[in-house]
Image (cartoon, rainbow, N blue to C red; front, side):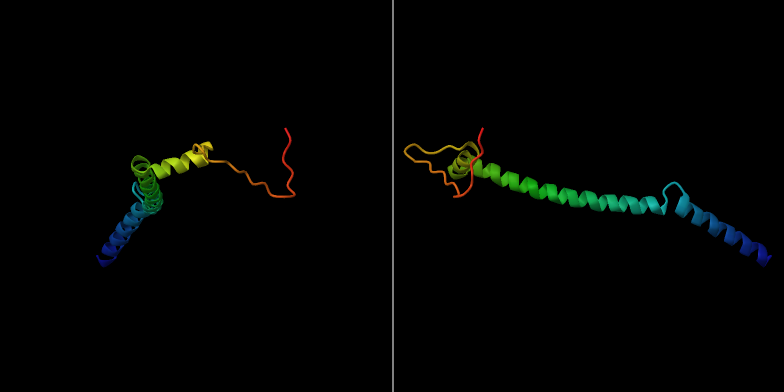
Length: 98
């Protein structure tokens, strides 16, 4: 009697272990999903930081003319009326010819 109870319990334990490791929602899938969650959270945090920076830049462009002027100068090469543009060239450097 005790032997059958022990065998039944061992078979039950083996069945539960099989389901845990190889069943429908097994332990490996859980670990894989946890890693994916961590990666997604890191990506979300980086994107959130980028969004904050872009939001601050948008607010600065809406409210301040200095940011708009800086962007026009650096990206478009614009200068104010009455200013003189100086371009400094390092000595000894040859300029590329077209």
